[in-house]
Length: 355
Ligand SMILES: Cc1cc2nc3c(=O)[nH]c(=O)nc-3n(C[C@H](O)[C@H](O)[C@H](O)COP(=O)(O)OP(=O)(O)OC[C@H]3O[C@@H](n4cnc5c(N)ncnc54)[C@H](O)[C@@H]3O)c2cc1C
Image (cartoon, rainbow, N blue to C red; front, top):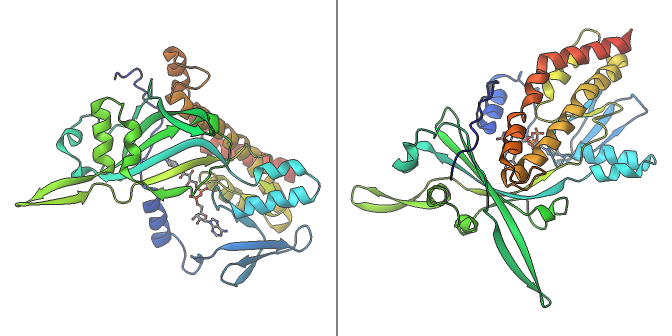
């Protein structure tokens, strides 16, 4: 194993546990009674083109709003309903954006408290630095005997690790990919607890790496006084089928908008602008879509190429020079157009439409 690229980003990335951020916002930054948790949207309908939208929830309650912003993730109900409406309006192509597609990759993920890691990992000077182990020659074959035919499926692999929560927790994500299955439907639950034997796929890695994975995902034996007790390093290691969406053609339809986890700042600023009122709402939404949709689709496309690249299966193959140069430009989109620049672009677009 050797390092072929040390990549130093010029941007400052902050590593935190997403759940901690959500809890902090919910506890300290939301005005009282503004948020209602535990609600599941089951349908919405709008009276006329710009009338109020009625929301129906699984618990039987309902609510009215002028604008519906769906930030409901990859399985978004709002996106599904928006695309369904387009199909009903005579645009059958929109059906392919209703459901997510499987990328062909499975991620095994463990969050390991750093102070429980064995000494050899804890004292690794690289521990607090993000690290990716690329899967050169790490092809793990499964043989399936099917009606007399032997099907060989090659699983490609790569592993990422980085510290979060002020370096108190190590996030370990080990990927197993079957590129030939990308864009197919994943047969099974998307997220399950994982059994450490599933990590056997990594047994052909260098001992340092496979040992690192074993201790991250396995129950570790430790000594307390004279007792030997098994204790878990990671709470509930998970196995996730990694899905994404085909690049979306729209983010907005009438008074309904879709929002990904990084889009809110732009939309909130446009909606809070003094020129935005109910009769000018469509301009704010269109300006938001104009700036964020191409960016989101571009990041999705870059991400699609990144996994295979770490497994030497991208268009760069195992050409280290080409991979190195692609990796060095992976995050260019962040500095090319910072969030404040994007906001200015969106505001100009909105003001253009208003004048
Ligand atoms: C293995 C893995 C590793 C990742 N690692 C990173 C990483 O290191 N860094 C990073 O930035 N991103 C990472 N991501 C991606 C990140 O998790 C997503 O980009 C992010 O969570 C998307 O945020 P979101 O708000 O769009 O959706 P989500 O976080 O999925 O939130 C959607 C919310 O909507 C709710 N919801 C869904 N349907 C309804 C409904 N009908 N009614 C009401 N509520 C509903 C859900 O319960 C959920 O709370 C990772 C993803 C995976 C799978």
